[in-house]
Amino acid sequence: MKKRVVLRADASKSIGYGHFTRTLALANILREHFICFFATYKPSTYQLNEITNVCSYLPLEGNDILQYNSAFLSSLNTDDIVVLDNYFFDTNFQKTIKLKGCKLVCIDDIHTRHFYCDVLFCPDPCSIDSYSLETFTRFYGGLEWAFLRKPFLENRYTRPACNEIKNIILGIGGADPYNLTDRLINLLLDKSLNVMVLAGDTVHISKKHYKYIDRYIKASAQEIVQLFNKADLGIFSASTICNEALAVELPIAAGYYVDNQIEFYNYLKREHFIYPLGNFLSGDLSFCLDDITNFYYKKLDINYESQAVKVKDIFLNL
Image (tube, rainbow, N blue to C red; front, side):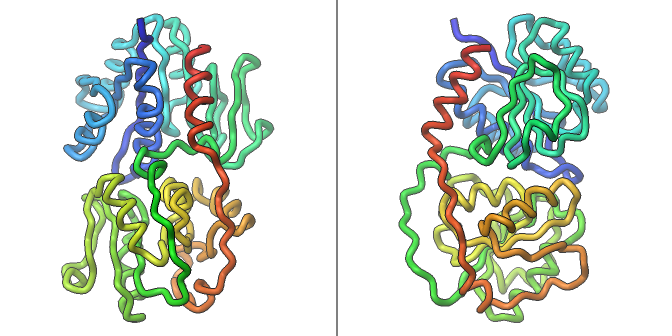
């Protein structure tokens, strides 16, 4: 019989949607060989639709996060494989899962706590030396472990050479707590560009901008791929969306606005995967389009079919 994999990743205005997105992409890789269930605290209709397109939703009760966490732990079976992706799953929470007899897989990119898991995936270019791990923990780090949703892996669009930037897609995250989306829209409209905006349902966009931009609220992965293929440039935060854009070879200008994006941003900048925009909160969001057009972008060379095989083997051997 197929083993059960229970995946847990939450999303909200404060923590964003990157954890949820990449964990669901992992579920899509695993579902052929495992029975996958996805748990998430207070899911939106969008999240529920995304989950049920890939695997089964695990309904749990809880008036607050502590009650929900307790319900989550109680739902686990001894022989489950559990996947956790969020920064607040501390060492004690991990130990509780392990003591139930489960195998535990964690996804992390900030290495701020000790990990008590069987497998740790870091989708950023961190080394094992950056982490505090148990001796039994197997570590897999680097961009090849950045799990992407299926449409980004199946895209067959051949991008033509671009001598002028006319169409820009803007995505600062599913939450955008600092209202950066609106500020960047102001800047882009001053440059007479066609602007497509990706946003979650909590992202504020001024109504005065509606007639000048194309808004895509809670777009599906397939819709995002199609928009990427229309765009000449993506302006993003240094997060999961950069990995998705790199996979379809969209030129990227990226910055950061929270601490957990800085390390990834510096790597993308150092490797010439992005045109660097720096700290979005610094006050100066200006940039020169000619500089971006003439920038040398290095392409990402990852065999995602090989990655999927490796991931399945790792889980099958737990």
